[in-house]
Amino acid sequence: MRTPNPAPRTFTCTALWSMILAPEMELGPISQTETSTDNSQMSQAADVTDAQWDSVVLKSDVPVLVDFWADWCAPCKAMGPYVDRLAAEYEGRLKVLKLNTQDNPDVPANYGIMSIPTFLIVQNGEVVKQIIGSQPYDQLKAAVDPYL
Image (cartoon, rainbow, N blue to C red):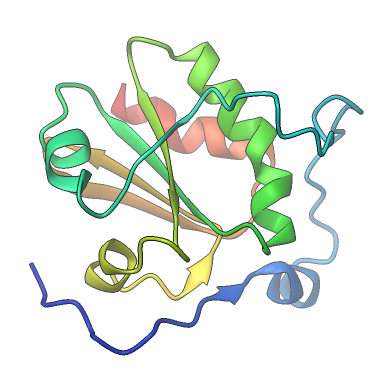
């Protein structure tokens, strides 16, 4: 594992790149309840920290989907309902976790993550797939399915 960079990390939100590179990409309909800013609703995806990474992610008995996000990132927030939907749909077969890159800079640095949202699929302690940017739900689900 690479040694974390001690300098503060700066992450790029992929919203602008998504509009430039794929303006025709639609995330699909999101219901009013999915866009609620009421933080009293708990996410289906559990939080993971730098300190928990090895025990919770790398040593998991089931495949893990990790959502790298930040509170200020609009595309990250837009993907939240899709991440929660995957967590509910694959409960027991897939561990779905969220890592706040602002509070936990070491893991993103170790994996070279520079843009958010970024998703890693980890199986048997190894990254088997990396997805960068907002994705339609069906595309995110299709990326996960081969590892279940």
